[in-house]
Image (tube, rainbow, N blue to C red):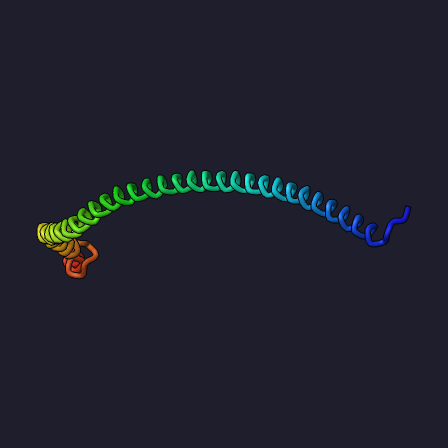
Length: 142
């Protein structure tokens, strides 16, 4: 039997085409399967990331709200303290004035005592035996 070269070539081409289509189909299925797996894992990862992000965001919002409340509360205390400080400044000025008045009155009340003490000291000095006039008197009497 005689077979032509062209028929062999056609058979080879046909077989090649069949093999190519079979491989293409197989690889397409593999690619499709890999793509599905990748998309699934990507979707799960994104879901986890979103969940984590939302959880973290909620925590931060709670913390922010807590800090805002604390700031408001502390601001009210700060305002109250500032009001007290302004009142304390006025009060301290009044107290200083009163203390100065009291010091002056004490000095005025002690002045006669100091005068008396100085007079007594002066008389003591005069009556002291070592004083010149007294010594002269004692020397004359002896």
